[in-house]
Amino acid sequence: MLLAPRGAWAQEAPKMFPSNRPPLGQRKFVSKAVEREIERVSALIKDPELAWLFQNCFPNTLDTTVYMGQVGGKTDAFVITGDIPCLWLRDSAAQLRPYLHLTREDPQLAELFRGLIRRHARCVLIDPYANAFMRDPTALTSLSWAKGDRTEMKPGVAERKWEVDSLCYVLRLAHDYWEFTGDVEPFDATWAAAAKTIVATFKEQQRVSGPGPYRFQRRSDQPTETTLAGIGVPTRKTGLIHSAFRPSDDACTFPCNIPGNLFAVATLRELAEMAGAVLRDAALSAEALALADEVEKAVYKHGTMRLPDGRQVFAYETDGYGNHLFMDDANVPSLLGLAYLRAVPADNALYQTTALAVWSEANPWFFSGSAAEGIGGPHIGEGQVWPMSITIRALSSNDDAVIAGALRTLRNTHAGTGFMHEAFDKDDPKKFTRHWFAWANGLFGELVLKVAKERPHLLAVEY
Image 1 (cartoon, rainbow, N blue to C red):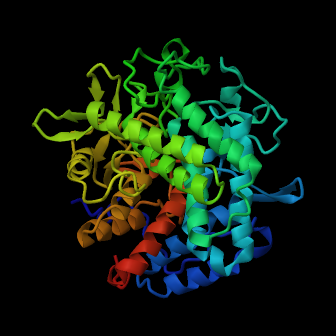
Image 2: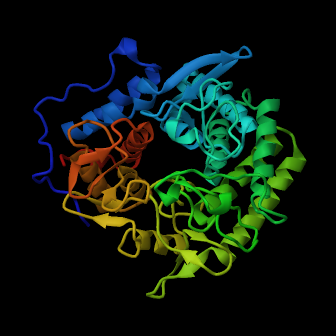
Image 3: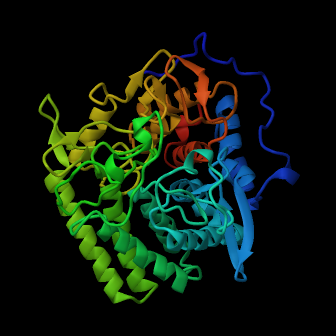
């Protein structure tokens, strides 16, 4: 395994590591529990550069992306992605996840979660097919690239790329907050309506009786920015949920994305639990369970394939006609990230074989260079490694060597910025995209927390 030794491309660590966080008075949200956690975990980290990265990255979402307010007398939270001032359903849910374990000791942090859960519900009810939203629900999109899209753009929508995982993340954030805290306060009639809308949208996009109402086309010199005829290539209706776009916001090659469908199975079952215990809606619970079972059967019947060397793996996408695409993308849900998302057990043999294959040349979007090895994707292009893929591999692994190697690589490839990036050149990390990408920062923080809890000896060394 490539451990990314320092080379000519690496920024030599300065003797001192001044904080890259905003001054206290300029931080968007301050949590005493998070600050205590930073101190606790930092004390376990022997490597000063790794500790500095954690101190910058872990609080980045709170420091820079949170906007608190009130709607109807209740807390509202709008969480932007970073350098794009809009809320992505997927990103915002993932950005808060690293702080969930601290909500019991910090009421304000719990209120932030409640505010985002409420905001998500209102966004879904604006348009369940949209992936990104404006802070002002009456505003038209501010995103220059979305203004000419041929789709039904409603006020409040920033971008309308239909991605199955967007709605999965809404359910996952709600379920995990409820399960950890026992708090049912945000799960009111609005949230219940959004949950029913999610189930209805998933069923609509099984496309059993037609393609449904969603259409999307965009003028672009990148084919991954638009869809064939507004809906994608023809499919056989197998029970799989169709998606126009991947978690990367790139168009699907085949509309049935297997990681997204498996994530939907997991979150539908979590919704069924909440529908029964919180909403007292037995009909919704039964409907969610039945849909989850139907989609899961379809995945195992139509969503697996054999590689040229004979190995049986999950496909990345399929059309239901027997055509499959094997690849993986750095964004989550991914094939690599299925265990991390609790979409399959970590010891699932099919998953283990798939994970090995996607971290290899069997995956056309796996790259290995002098600086790092990892998975990228069409969104940025060939030769570009995403730190997110390195982090997800470590979060999914029980191998000390894999985890230590990931920590070393991530420490060595931030290009002296003290933060994670969207992607960097496999041979030169100073060539990177997105200087401010809060999800990637938070995911790195989540990895360090997991290592501190389960393998603290890996933090007690210098890399």
